[in-house]
Every structure is written in structure tokens, then in C-alpha cells.
Amino acid sequence: MRFLSCCFIFLSILQSAEAKELVTTHNILSMQQRAEFIDKTTQQRVQQLLPRLMKETNIDMWILISREYNEDPILKTLLPAKWLSARRTTIFVFSLEDNDTVGSYAIAPYNVGSIFEKAWDKNKQPDQWQALLSLIKDKKPNKIGINQSKDWAHADGLVASEKEKLLSTLPTSYLERVVSAQALGVAWLEQRIPEEMIMYENIVAIAHDIIAQGFSNEVIEVGKTSTNDLVWWFRERVRELKLQAWFHPTVDIQRKDNKKFDHVDSFTNGYEDNIIQPGDLLHVDFGITYLRLNTDTQQHAYVLKENEKSAPEDLIAAFNSGNQLQDIFTRNFKVGRTGNEVLKLSRKQAIEQGLKPTIYTHPIGFHGHAAGTTLGMWDSQQGVAGSGDYPLHFNTAYSIELNNAVFLQSWDKEIRIMLEEEAFFDKDGVRYIDGRQTQLHLISSHKN
Image 1 (tube, rainbow, N blue to C red):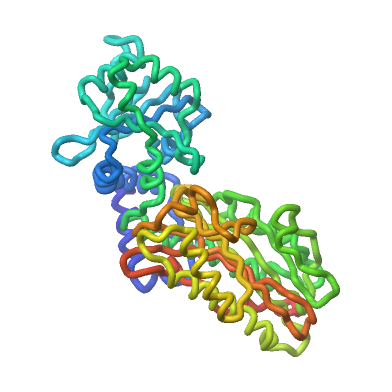
Image 2 (image 1 turned 180 degrees about the vertical axis):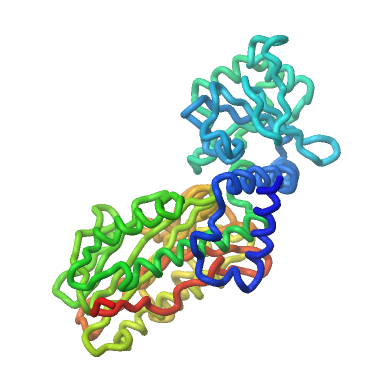
């Protein structure tokens, strides 16, 4: 309990002005505190969130089944923090009760934390699937949701063999009650609760701080450090802080030369390794995982030339156009609008304002590329079937990912301002979870 108290004292501190200071290793939780936070917030999510979601999606029983090392992506978000995987065959059952609460049951060979009531006594009933059937018959559900989805991999976690076993166990009268839990699964993954959002601000601040450190003369020696050196510095820095990167970072350079910057080719084939030089425009794509939540951030830095104290005015104007595109886009977030509708409206408005936009924003949370409303892909600017047709909901988080192409007169070429920042959408609109980049990071050409 002492560590749990420390954890929630820490959460209170985060709400104060001191939380806005740069993050250091001193306010990254210990592994034990992380586990306590994860288990506490998972319990809060089940109690606060799940009853409403099950009612809204008209599912009164939700069954999740996984075998060890082949986990359903949703089931993994419900495992106790000390469980790094399912064990043998793990079955979770959520049942909507008459008093608008949810009963949580584990049909598993081991005790599964404090959230789940153990619903299988192997000594009394050797067959795990018959224990599941007994619970189903006792609860008499009208709709049994299983994790099958054609639009989201996250909600498609029930493998063929486990589905076959489940259906062969159910009496004929129950088979017609089995439905896809896609809507429930996506809602569970995309919705955030207040306790998570308090901590999410800190998580994004940590990511911002790591980027600021990487885009500085503390790390970069101009004329010597390469983009690949910087990529691996980011990887090492994350491990030093006892965190995880959920994807390998990228660092790329745009500069005044005769090479065309092809962002599509770079997305598909990767970025070439370059030595960082004065006058370069650097770009990073970087994300961490902490407390089961993810970040995904893209920012820019400029390497000052001799006697320069700021970036050139036309480059600053180009960067500002990226912020302009962000503003156009996020003002169009409205509950009930689909991702494809927001994409189409935003692109139209941006083009009318003289911009050259590409928008590819995705939900973020338990997964980096998470379940929820997709708002464009870099290769699908006319809309995305399925996940792009899904409407926006309050209390959801997004990586506002996009770029604007600008012809830079001083370089006589087109460049891309590529930005990505975490944002939260609620009844007050869209807010950036820890702010957004509004000025270029500046790197001196001289070693400090």
C-alpha cells in the first residue's frame, strides 16, 4: 500500500505547475509503482467505463479467449501488470448485471489478479470449456460478444481454433446469440478515463523531453554525427530511462541541394544515412511505451549556419504552415463525423487557403496505431474504407499526423513540414496533451 500511496500522490503532483517542468528520471515510476498504477487504472476502467460501453453496444456478455503467447490484443490490456502474457488458455468473461454493473470472471488455471472472480475449480470440473458453459447458462445472456472484426486487427483477436472450440461447446440455442464485439472492443480500446489522462500528460512530456535532448548540441556534433547515430541515441536513451520504444525511430534531413525529397519513397524504403551539416532541416519520428500507453511524435530542428541566430524567415514560414494545417484539421473534429468526412473537409479548406496537405492521423492509446477513427493514410487521401467510416467519439486520443508541402524559394525546391503530436478530443474540442511544437529546435554548428 505504501507504493500505491506514492503513486497517487505523484498523480496529484502532476496536476500542479511543477508537472510542466522538463521530465527527468526522478519522476519516472519504479517498476512496482508502474504495476500498481496499471492494475488500479484497469480496475477503474472496468468499473467506470465497461458498463456504459456494454449497454451502448447492446452486448450483455463479452468473452475473450487467449492461449499463452498468442494473446488477443484486447485481452492483453486486461492482464494484471505482473502477467506478461496469458497462461495456458486464459478466458475472461464480462457479464452486464441487472444493477448496471459488470461482473468480471476468469476461467483460467491460475488466479488472475483482483479484478476477476475465479470461475473455474478444476477439481470440481476438469473441463475448462464446460466451466465456461456453466457460467454462460447461469447468466443467460441475450448477446454474446466475441472478438471478430474485419476493420480492426485489434478487435479481431479470437483465433480460428478457439472460436471453433467455443462454438462446439455452446448448445444450439446459444449459437444465434453470438455476435461480433467489434464496436465494444474498439470503444474499450479508444476511450480514455481521467486517471489515465493525468498520467498521459507526463508520458508525452517525457517523449518531448527526449526529442529536445536529441535535437541539441548535447547529442549532435555538426559535421560528425550522422542521422543513424542519432536514431540509435534515441533507442539507447529510451532504455536508459527504463522505457520502451514501440517502433524504431527515424531521422531524416532536407537540405539545399539538387535532391528531391520524396516522403512516399522514404515511408516505404526508409531514409538514407547522412552526416548532419549546417543549414540542414532535421526531422524525427519517435514513440515510447510507458504504463501501457504510447506516444508517436514528429518534430523538426534546424542546424544554424555560421553567424546565424535563427532559422531563415522562409523556413520559419514553411514550418508555421504546418501549424496552420493542424489548426484547420483539428477544428473539424465533431462527435459523429467520420474520419473520412473530417479528412475531406479539412483537405478542401487547406487547399483553399493555399496549402498542399497530406493528412494521415490515427488513434493512439494502448497501441501506437490504435483502434478507433482513422483520418486518412499517406497513400489514401480520398478516405479509408472501414475504419475511416467510423465516427468520432469524445474522450479519445489521436496522433495528429500530417504534412504540408512548401516550395522554399531560397532552396529552389519543395520541402515537407511533417508534424505529429498527441491530442485529446472531448466536449471542449481538441487539445494537445502536452502542447505541440510551434518553433523549430535550433542546433548550433559549434560544439558547446
